[in-house]
Amino acid sequence: MKKVRTQLMLCGGTGCHSTGTPAVREALEKEIEQQGLSEEVQVVETGCNGFCAVGPVMLVQPDGIFYQKLDPKDIPYLVEEHFLKGRPVKKFFYKEPDSKETIPGMNDIPFFAHQQLRVMRNKGLIDPEVIDDYIARDGYFGAAKALQEMTPEQIVEEVKTSQIRGRGGAGFPTGIKWEFASKSPGDVKYVLCNADEGDPGAFMDRSILEADPHAVVEGMIIAARAINAHKGYIYARTEYPLAIRRLNIAITQAKEYGLLGKDILGTGFDFEIEIYEGAGAFVCGEETALMRSIEGKRGMPRPRPPFPAHKGLWEKPTILNNVETLANIPQIILNGGSWYASVGTETSKGTKVFALSGDIYNIGLLEVPMGISLRTVIYDIGGGIPKKKKFKAVQLGGPSGGCIPEQHLDTPVDYEEITKVGAIMGSGGMIVMDENTCMVDMARFFMDFIQDESCGKCTPCREGTRRLLQILEKICDGKGEPSDLESLDKLSAIIKDSALCGLGLTAPNPVLSTLRYFRDEYEAHIYEKRCPAKRCAALLKFEVDPELCTKCGACFRHCPTEAVIWKKKEIAVIDKEKCIKCMTCFEKCKFGSIF
Image (cartoon, rainbow, N blue to C red; front, side, top):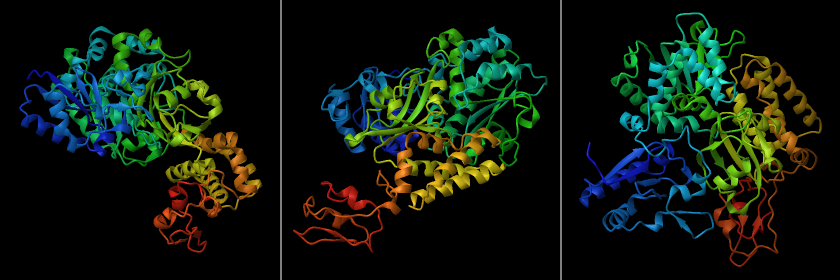
């Protein structure tokens, strides 16, 4: 391996791939070769860096200079200035929203400064397709310790000491789950990794797998040793091609190094991992449905008990953890459970990875210590709400979660505290909404998703969610009645009490949380036939205010149906017959003359 003076750590996650990383990499390598810098400068494509909003991004090591929004056409200038003349290019430095100040280092950027990396400690720092890079940062040291120095009982105790709770959504203590499976009789047991991430707005598991696949493989090895399993499956949704490709590479490399397969590290312990590609059914995120899917059956939940720790995959003792949980395990074993438990709150230890998206400046992947406030995440890390609009709510927990309003923004990120305000921690999706979001329509969106993804096995979920959706659609269409509010409350309570699986039991949460905090919006839709957020098309009527109209014609030029009547130096008029209520004129008018 050649020694180089500078490494260009170019983000190679799906987000940056979509904004041009392949073309930037090609331009970098070409320019570096043309300038005769190949012996000094090396381009390394990493996994997800996390800061998706400003991609493609690149970290120059060892200088620690962070470049953002790179474009292939700018690469010749960047290479000449920085790597030939030694002058970092300020044009590509990160800038705070509405600020002229430039900050070159990652640690000085608020998005990174407030984070605490454990699961994502290797993000942007290693090539995920090179096992030596992972080993150089203490990779597989935890597995070696677990296999060579610890008994299965000691591994379980260390995980229990850490107090880590499952990061897939339910928050069940991981150590206790492992203890149940380890004590279950039987020579055949299984370790499963749930990488079927299906929540709208969630991309945590995908990004972890793309950036650090070996961490998950190592976590599964330790879990297998803890319960004496010799076969593992990673259930990954087929829509994650890059994550699956890197997982396959990681598994192959681990086998070549004697870290998977027969007689791992000469300890006599055998363990194999196989990737099972799911078809993207949301219900297969539920553990028993996932197991049925691996068995080749239709992915549908089954009643519990018996629990998977006693009868799981093929009726054998099984543990299932999600990607983030397993990625934590190697460091817990290597550094000790007490080290892990030193961060967080009394009931929620460690860190949590979130996918931050929606109406916010800094869309991306972040890892924060448990106990941090939602306000800090949204305003200090996320950068706040664009276009000087007001914050309205944040959705946590995906379709099974709830919407948290501004008065609860100081709620700490803690399993119990988040539940108290009407949401759940979930797997880590965090969708921010501004003042222009209609909360009734938001509830309708999530209920449409849930109803479509219901497996149909139990009547409360199959029929109950359908009826909830019908009522919400009726309200959004301006046909709501006062009795609909009572129907939503009663039907939600019935579903929560009687659905078969966790997905069905939490299905009404988006409705209940929006009714709890935004009941006035429901009432405006029903009693006044008005959408306060101006989003429900059936309730909108567009008019031009002649006193505010500047006669610029912007509404006329952008209207897709020629519903705007306008002539130069004249006030615009909207033809109600042609208007399709697409909101284009409202959004394009800079003077607020359309209401």
